[in-house]
Image (cartoon, rainbow, N blue to C red; front, side):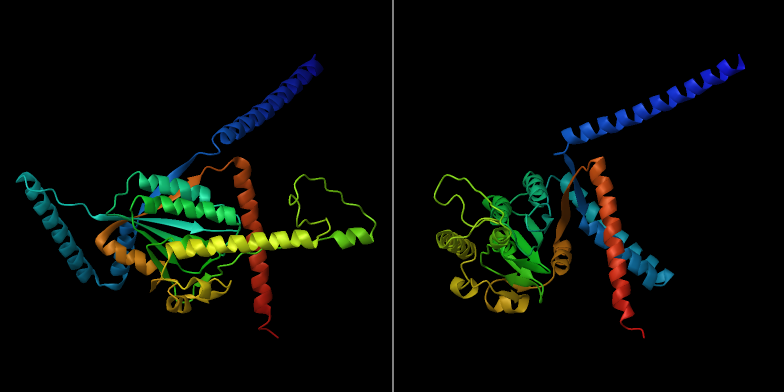
Length: 353
């Protein structure tokens, strides 16, 4: 009898464990399915940068000033704010003309890779901004990109055109690099600003790929391609490259380069396009001499200046990540930290005997 009781308890524990595992797996699968259905959904984060700079200033004042001076300064600031609020209420009570609102500056960020993968976030951020922005406002884009695929950066540039078509001034700031497809976007700016040593230019088109045809032939490996259309296959990784195919690709590259030059000249007519469309790059100081930019500055300076006269909002659209994406990000971050730590130790070891 005791044996049967113990056996029954064992079965109960086993069944409980199995049901618990099934419940966890079901929850994970349901969560994955929900994430799959909502993969396109995300959330817009809005940050009032004026408040952030005010907090930074307050922290510095609290540390640098003595207690008495800090209290006096805050007393004066509160008094000034109260007087401005009182004057505004009095004007509204007397039936005077409502005071015009302050200009708003919307700050966007684009950190481009070869596929311009941030264009999805950019288009949604622009849609959010255009739902509120008026012609008296501005959009400031912090742009970083070494360029990439033509069609991807063509789409990113088209998103910026939506701002210009609404007659809203577009300012673009480049702190590090805006080359090739990056400059395709940058030249759309009503005012283009770059840091002194930011890299700009590379107005050119490039097609390159490895070809293993001779290696396959040497090892007696056949590679067959069946296509319809004279130029359906030109340059391929494994097929034999013919002069006719190479000439066709060269023709296509030249045509795309002409379109790129026309795009830059259309949107930035002050440049001498034939002098800068050589595929070369220049730093900000040199680009200024060639009329490729309008001013030398950093994005931080531009934003802080804007905060003096306008309400400045940073807009960022963040896609929701699935559980697998989050786990992948954690693993990737751990690998990156390990590699950087190893590289740091190797670099520092050079200075020890």
